[in-house]
Amino acid sequence: MSLEILPVAGIGEVKPGQDLAALIVEATGGDRLRDGDCVVVTQKVVSKAEGRLVPIDPADPLSHKPLVEQESVRVLRRRGDLVISETAHGFVCANAGVDLSNVEEGFAALLPIDSDRSARRIRDRLRALAKVEVAVVISDTFGRPWRRGVTDTAIGCAGIAAVVDLRGSTDALGRELKVTEVALVDEIAAAADLVMGKSKGVPVAIVRGLDEAWFRPGSVAKEIVRPPADDLFR
Amino acid sequence: MSLEILPVAGIGEVKPGQDLAALIVEATGGDRLRDGDCVVVTQKVVSKAEGRLVPIDPADPLSHKPLVEQESVRVLRRRGDLVISETAHGFVCANAGVDLSNVEEGFAALLPIDSDRSARRIRDRLRALAKVEVAVVISDTFGRPWRRGVTDTAIGCAGIAAVVDLRGSTDALGRELKVTEVALVDEIAAAADLVMGKSKGVPVAIVRGLDEAWFRPGSVAKEIVRPPADDLFR
Image (cartoon, rainbow over all chains, first blue to last red; front, side, top):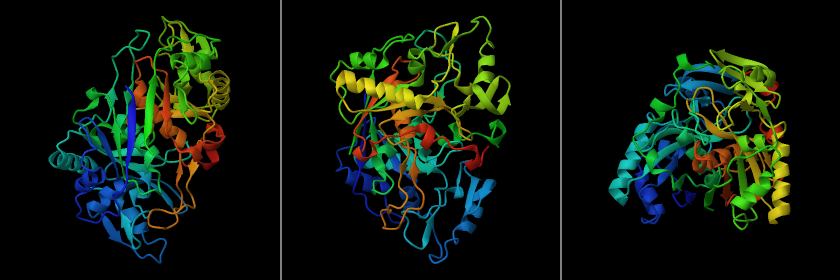
C-alpha cells in the first residue's frame, strides 16, 4: 500500500461565507477527488470561510492579546509575549490558536468553534457536490514541548478514525502489542503539510491510499483531546 | 509538487551486525531508490542492527525497568509502571525508549547511541551500494502531552534539514512570517508511519518528492532537541 499526497493549489483568498467545499471541488478540476481520499484542510481557510475573523488594530502589535486571553480557559506558561494555553476545545497551543499570519491586515483569525463539525460539513458538501466519499481532516500548526519546530496536527476530522487502536493485535513476532494507539489524523495532518509549506498558498491537500479500515466516524475532540485528569503534564 | 510514500516490505528479522543498508537495497530490488528520496527507517531495526539489545528475564514483566532507569538522565513523570523521562540524547519519551515489542523474547532494545550518526552511516552505505544520493530519517514512536495517541517522530537524520526555517519569508499576503520553523523530519517520520503500521513488519519507507532545497546536512540532536533552559515545560 503506497500513499500519494497531492497539493490542491489555486484556491486563492477565502472570504467569510464562502463554500469551501465548492472551492476545493473547483480547484481540483472537479474530477481529481476519489472515493477513499482524505482531504486535509488548514484551519486558516476554515476559520476564514466560517467568518472567525476579529478586527484588530494593525498599528498595535499587541492588539490581539485580549483575544488570546478570551480564547484561553487555562494558561499553562507565559514567557514574554508568548502564551501557551488551553482553549475551550482542550487544545494546548501558543496564543490559544489566535493567528495573524496569512490573515488580512487588521484581522485575527480564531479557531473554528467545533472543528469536527466543520470537517463533517465540508465532507457532506464534498459528497453532495462531487459525489465522492472522502474523509476530511482540519489541520493546524502547533509547537511541542521538548522539541523545537512546529508540526501540523489535526484539530478536527470526519469520516476517519482519529486514533487507530492497535491494542490486542500482535506484533510481527506474534506477541500481543500492549498499547499502540496511533494518532492517525495527526500523522495525516503532518504528512499533508509536506506539500503545503507555510507560505505557498496551498491550504488543502489530498492524501490518497490510506487503509480502508480507517474510514469510519471519527472525532479529534473525543479521541485525541486528553482530559486534564488523565494528563501527566497539566 | 506531489509526494509519494512507498513501504519497503520484505526486510524480515534484523540481527545484530547486519548491514541495514544492504537489506534495504535488496528489499527494494536494487532499482527502486532514486536520487532525492528520503529513506525512513524505524529505530527498532537500527537498534537491532547495531546490537543495542540487552537480555532481560522474559518471565518477569518488570525486568526491563532497571534499563529504563539506566537510560534516563531525568525523570519527568511517573504513574504506575509508566515513566516519562529524558534520555542522554535529550529525547523525552516513555520508558526512555526501552522497547520490548517486536523484539525477540528475552531482549529489550535500547535507542541507538547517536541516531544522527546511525542515519549518516546508512546514507553513506546506500550511496556506496546503490549509487544514490538520498536522505535518511530514523523514526521512533513517541507519545505527547495533552493529546492521546502516539505518532512517529524523528530521532536522527542525515542529508536533510531537521528543521526548515521559514522565518523572514513572506506569507501569501506579502507580510513577513514571524516564526515558522517547521520540524520537517518529524513530519516526514509521521508521514512514513502511515504506510508502516505497527504490526505489519514494514520497518522502512521511502518518501519521494520532497523539496530539493531541504536536502542539506541536518541533525535532530542539534536542530530539534530543545535544551532544557529554552524549554517552558522542564
